[in-house]
Image 1 (tube, rainbow, N blue to C red):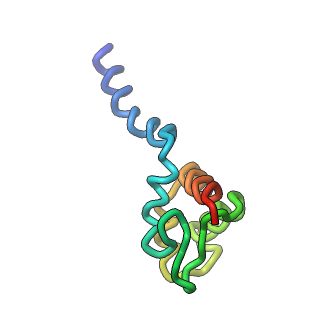
Image 2 (image 1 turned 135 degrees about the vertical axis):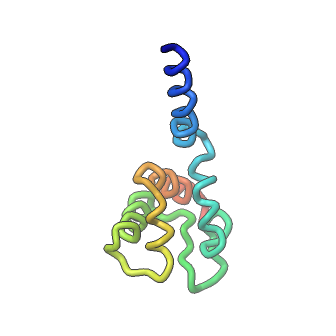
Length: 99
């Protein structure tokens, strides 16, 4: 019985730790760098700069992509991989970056 509880606790640890890690938002946002630039400062005029964007606005946009409410070429596929908690972490990270 104790062994089963220990195994269950260890199995859940990575899931709980990912949301509690101080750099979780930055780590999730790293996948955005190819198009939106490092730290959300896009150098390409065709891609929106995310640095300094209002947190709630960015979270809403990501959810709209994910939920199919906003058309996109690629973003809807990328956003489908994020939970609400991960979207909130990404939005908070970019909101904290200087423009």
